[in-house]
Image 1 (cartoon, rainbow, N blue to C red):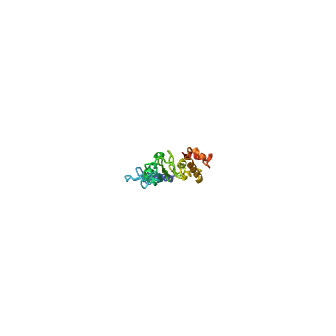
Image 2 (cartoon, helix red, strand yellow):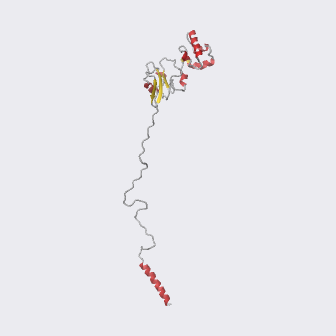
Image 3 (tube, helix red, strand yellow):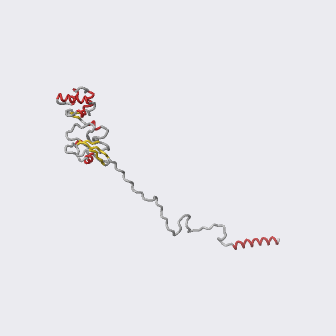
Length: 222
């Protein structure tokens, strides 16, 4: 019995001694929390600020200006220097005439649309006052939006009107359906009768019927 009491007392003494001998915070199993320190990955207190990275290595430069498209136009007719001229994009008929030395004194500018934009590769014909025998391959600018003696489209050719009393063989052959033989018969009829009094007189020329006359009616005059 005495031995049991001694053992219990000894255990109590050991427990009390171990608790009283331990220092707070030393060897303990609890974790220590630190405040005021730098956050993980962040800059150290008092350290220099890091400059923000540039989004691009250099400032984007201004885009190069679009290249200007050159227009090449063949100016013929009543101008001082007929020939091929080079114009800037967006040029108008008036500019083309200036580049060709300007219109001559006998030029009939009323028959041109000077404000029309020219097209690359077109042929611009400037008629003279009273001129009617204009080659159909050239034609004349007849109004707003019309092509002046243009390129290969051929619409100006339909606008050329031929005077039956002054046209020569070559000019008559520019008319639709008129070849060398028929052009010669038209001239022969004119020589025989003096002149054409009306376009309907073409019906008296051998080889011109109602169908062919219908094609010619708007292309001839007297």
